[in-house]
Image (tube, rainbow, N blue to C red):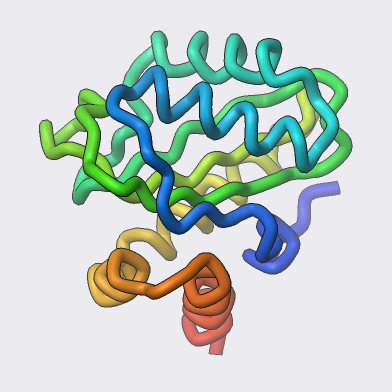
Length: 158
């Protein structure tokens, strides 16, 4: 069923946290697992375990103070995204050793091979825009962050 998912299909205004207060990579993943679990109806401990296991394979800190933790999740029905702006940057063992302050969680159904990879590529492409990331870092609230993300993708597509 491989089709390009839009940012509006990945996230909603409910799946943005503009001020996540955490101090470690593990805290980030636990908080994101809890928030996402509430929205998608998956057990938060099981979700954290999947994310932590993926992170142990190699960091999802992609550089430029951005991380994209991602995993395939048993029982999930569709690809799901959640963006968190951290109150304070945390060490995410990123590839450039810079602490992370923008985290985009990407969850996919277990069987979503191509959809998972396409969504990951799309999120990565959007978050490589330095001007957009600067706006995300200074946005006043979650609604503004959501609008910036969805408008950025639409602008890229135009």
